[in-house]
Amino acid sequence: MDLRERIAQMQEQINEMTAAHADEIEQLRIKYLSKKGEITSLFNEFRNVPNEEKREIGQLLNQLKEEATSRINTLKEQYDEAVSNASKADLTRTPDPIKLGTRHPLSLVKEEIIDIFSRIGFTVAEGPEIEDDWHVFSALNFPPEHPARDMQDTFFIEKHPDILLRTHTSSVQTRVMTSQKPPIRVLCPGRVYRNEAISARAHCFFHQVEGLYIDKNVSFADLRQALMYFAKEMFGPDTKIRLRPSYFPFTEPSAEMDISCNICGGEGCGFCKHTGWVEILGCGMVDPNVLEACGIDSKEYSGYAFGMGVERITNLKYRVKDLRMFSENDVRFLNQFKSC
Ligand code: PHE
Image (cartoon, rainbow, N blue to C red; front, side):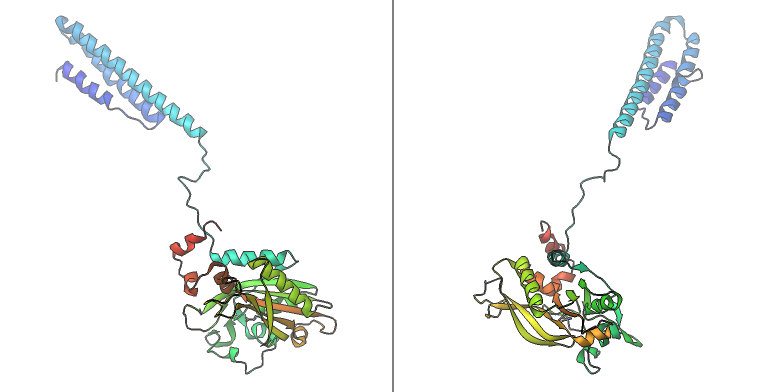
C-alpha cells in the first residue's frame, strides 16, 4: 500500500479513537506515538519517499502526528474531568428518584391508637400469634365448653389440640400479668385469627389493640374516663360515648362501647343503621378469677381491660366499606393514604 493511503487510513483510526480509562489512553499513545509506534514507523519510511513527494508526504505525516497527539490529549482531558466530577458526586445517594411508599392504613390507625394511649401512660407489649390454650382461654376464665374453643371458631394447629392461632390479643395480657408485677399499664396490638368465611364484613384474620390497667383501687369510672378520652382524641371533641352491658368471660362487669356515629354526627345514617351509634370496643373490669390465675392478688389489686378491632376504627375514620381491601395489596387503594 502506498504511504499516502496508509496515512489516510491511520488518520481515520485516530479520528475514531476512544478510551474509557487512563490505561487505555496510554496504550493508544504507545501504539501510535512511542518510539516503536505506528506513526513513528511511518516517519522512518519517509526516507524512502522520492524527493519530489517529500514535501507533500512530510506535511501529511506532520499533520497526522499533530492530530494524534491532540486527540490523545483531548481524551486525557475528558477522562480527568470525569474523574473530578465523580469525586464531587454524592456516592451515597440512591440512584434516580426514590419512589415513596405509603404506610398501610391499618398501621397508621394502630400507631394513632398507641399514640393516644401512650399519652396517659400506656406502653406496648407484644406476644406470639401461635399460642397455647391456657394463654388464650383458660387463664382468661373461658369455661371448657365455651364455643370459642370449638374448631368452628378457632384455628387449631393440626395434631396439637392445645396449640392454636390466637383469637384475641388478650393472650398477651395473660403473658404480661404472669411476668410483671402491678402496676401494669399495657397496650397489646397485633393480628388475630378467627375461623370465619371471608366477606366484606368479616375476615379470617384482623387486628386488635387491647389495653390492660392493673393497680390498687382501679375503678369502672377510671375505665370510662380513659375510653372517653380516647374517643374524643380519635374521632374529635364532639364525640359522645355510651356503654352498654355485655358479657366476656374475663371481665365482670363487662360492657361494649358505642360512639356517636362520626359519619352522620349521630343523626342516623346507613352506616350506623339509623341508630346514631356505632360499636367500637369491648371492655370491663378484669375478673378476679383472671387476676388469681395469673398470680395477682385480687384482694389487693383490681384492673380494667378493653379491646378494639383496628379494621373497625379504620373503617370509621376512612370509610372503607369492604374489609378485604385491607389485605389485597391493591396499590390504587394504598396510594390514597400517601399524605396521611
Ligand atoms: N378480647 C375481646 C375480644 O376479642 C375484647 C375485650 C378485651 C373485651 C378486653 C373486654 C375486655 O373481643
